[in-house]
Structure formats: C-alpha cells, structure tokens
Length: 235
Image 1: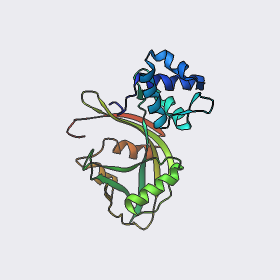
Image 2: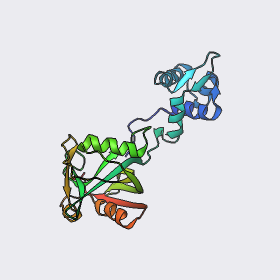
Image 3: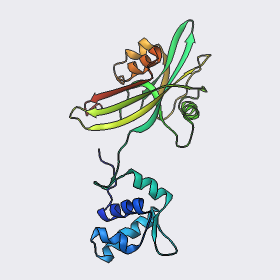
Image 4: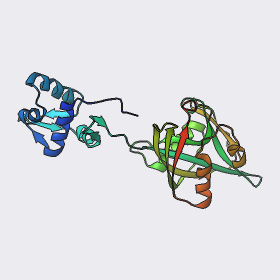
C-alpha cells in the first residue's frame, strides 16, 4: 500500500538538500532540480506553506523542526513517506471467579475486520508512557480501571492472499489482573465480554493472533512475529 501523498521531485530535492546542508540559498536549492525559476519557486513556496521550510532573515532556507522530522522519513527515490510498522498495544485483562480464569475478549463492530473476536487493542498514544496509555485506552473502551505490566512485543504483518501488505504493526503486549469481575460498558468501536480462553478461542471469526498472544503470556515468550494471510472479503 502506498502513502497518500507523493511529493514533487523538486520538493523532495529541497528537503533532501536541506537535510544534508542545513541551510542553503535559493539558487543552491534550484540548481539540482533543473527547473525554471517560476516553477521551482512554486514548489518551494508549497513547502513553506505547509511548515516544512522557513526562509531566514538573511535569505537562506532552513528546515523547520517539523520539516526535519518529515525529511528523515521521506523516501527520496519515490517522493513518499517511508511506510513503517505502526506502534500499537494488545491489552490482555484477566479476572478469576470461582477458581476459573477469564479474559476480557473484544469484538470489533467496525471495519476493517468487523465482527472479529480477539484481544482488545489500541494505538500507542504519542508522548504518553505505554502503561499509562494502556490504562487510559482500556478505561475509554470498557470503563474498567486497571494497571498494566509490559510482558512482550508481538509483530504482526497482515497480507492479502496475493501478497499485498494490509497492515504492519508492532504490538506491545500488556497484561492486567483485576478483581470483582467488573462489567465492561459499550463503546462505538466494539464490545467487550468476559469469557474463558476456551470460549474465546472457539469463536468462528477469531483473529489468528489471539492464540499466540495468550500463549506468549502463559509461556513467558517475550517476542514473536507472524504473517497473517486474509482473503479480501475478510478485510
């Protein structure tokens, strides 16, 4: 899958030049592109407008802090942002009732993977410690308060049968134990329900990573990596 924005080769050239030289004059930036001045000026102005480049008081051009961050992620060959694995979390919540262990299962009620069962997941919140983010996201999704521990990392690559990569995620695997069998509330993204591992793993529409996630916790495996292949109709 391609990123949605493709930068013009002149814009890519400017970002690459300023990443290496730090500061440069207009003529120094235009020369490698071979473009006429009016055309190049248009592309340079676009970079200024979106906040990636700034013109200093002495007339030289520099990358802004945001521009430096983006230039570091830019593929100079394609003019697109490099696609990298997304950071996410798997939130395993357990509770014991009458000597039976239950896990908090989650069913998606939105696309993609609508009606699939598995373990609740959430994106890593930018700038927030991961255990804090996990507690915030669980409470938002279920109304359940819990303190999490990080127990591992699980990389999951979802592909179509023809080989196209749908998603590539690095999941931090977190576990929390709660008491009192708290009832989860509903939210727009899905429903959560307490059930035994056997009940969860018997679901017909089940994320193939669910069994591995639970097994990693049981066996103490700290890292795993899987490729999951889906039909286009599944996604």
